[in-house]
Image (cartoon, rainbow over all chains, first blue to last red; front, side, top):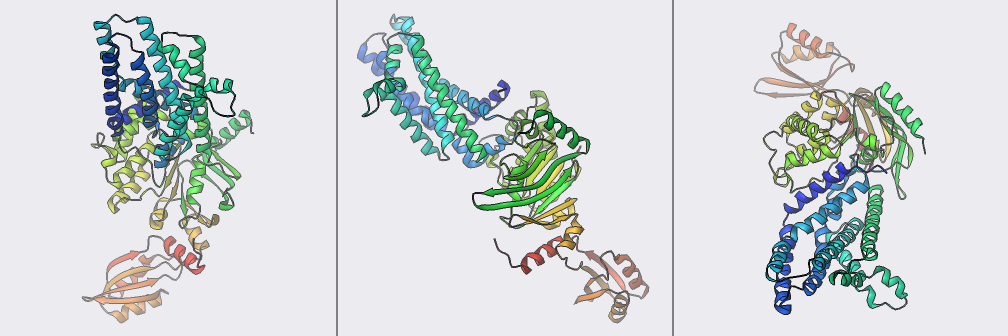
Amino acid sequence: MNVKPTVIAVISTKDLRSFFATPLAYLVGVPYTVLMGWYFYSSLVDTRSGELQTYFSGLHFLLLLTAPLLTMRTIAEERRAGALEMVFVRPVRELEITFGKWIAAVAILIILSYPLVPFLGVVLHLADPDVGILLAQLLGTGLLAALLVAVGIAASAAVESQLVAAFSAFAVAMVQWFADAGAGGIPNWVLRLAALRPRLVSFRYGVVSAEDGLFFVAWTLAWLFVANLLLTVARRR
Amino acid sequence: MRSRIAEGAAEDTALSHGIVLSLQRVGHQYGTRRALEGASGQVRRGDVLGLVGRNGAGKTTLLRSCAGLIRPTEGRLEVVGRDPYDLAARAVVGYLPEDPGLPREMRVASYVFHMARLSGLSRRTARQRMQESLRLTALEGLERRIIGRLSRGYRQRVALCQALVHRPQLLLLDEPTTGMDPVQIDAFHRMLRSLDQRPAIVLSSHNLHHVAEVCDSVLVIEHGRVVAQGTVSEVEASLGGVEREWSLELRGDEQAALLTIRAAGWQVHSIVEAKGVRRVRLAPPSEDQDPADLVRQLILSGVDVIRVEGDRSNLEPAFISRFTETGSTT
């Protein structure tokens, strides 16, 4: 399929600009950055070192809550308001819309995570952290954010209500988060295929493996595939 | 599935004949409810087709099918010889839905530019076409305004602006004048007539006077079925038209005026007198009768003719008369 990067870029740019023109940017962004700061402060006080495992653990859970709120209106609201229909009559493929919206949401999450820059600056200045571990932690966080955004986009493509989309995305993310805790009747190897926590622990302690990286990439693509499928169904409904 | 070669050939044939939209017994069914049945016809470049019908008659279903938003369950529909779902067909369609979903938080120019870019235009061309389109829809000076803060009439113009920005070959307008005041409606119709390289236009409207003014042909839909089709006068006749009425304002000898009018074969419907002026409503002996002859005879008989007014179209009374007679309700 001939997907045009320009169209993806046009869709992402519009979504990115629109997001920061809505109150949602502040309703989600302010608590997110405040909590990030709080976790960072607590982590420094608790550990009194440059080790940020506790901090990243908290940040990962914060992402579980934030990503669904950021993505809830991407498709659901546009569909409810009829804006998606205006896009559907243009020469745009569903896949371009899906990728465009995903890239925009990931970019928003990166922008909202700007406090990480001064936080890491402080740690690098005051302590002597292992930069390799730090980079692994950042990579794990980025991969998790990309996956959670994909889940959110899929949920937003499934329903017309923003709140239902946010709740569904959160529920799905929680299932994946706690999958390693076990569930009656489901074989452990299946649960391991979905479980997020064990993979993140590796990144948190600086262990980067191709298998863990592929896990996140595969799940992200799987959720984007679901989002694209739901969008195609919505278009032809 | 039709092959690419067949589709390319169909496109060439359509373009060589100037056919932009082709409908062959197009029908659509939502579950068990039949929304549209047997719509046929062709719209050529520069033609304006009016869709007329009551709420729920099937006009929007037909427009949405033409826009590639729903796939007809029966018949064949082609835009420039292609399936409306096809990207190449979508690139030449401009669509203004009845309730356009505009992003309320965006600025006018940003939105129009965004839609131009989505249509595949380069940044430079998109910017140029955006300016043209803003000028055409009288939105100049409002480029920086936030869409959500505009009045409904202006939002409708923004929606129209985005539908025109890529110079579509087929313009689909669903109730385009909703929310516009009479001045805006008049400006809108003048704008439609002034479009450069005029596209084929399919226009759905409840304002039948405007349909009669703007459209070359009309398709009347009722309960999903096409009940009349053709030029405005053909449709009027087909709907079992109402007599065309003229109104004259006269001053002078009433008896002489009435004698002249009757002698010319005209039928007087009513006479209302106010401040020495008589307003006479009358019908011609035949559809093509010119009132100029009657006016000349009245003047010769010593009657002053102050004003002559004619119904611009018979479409609306014919439509109302037809659908009131049948007593159909939706």
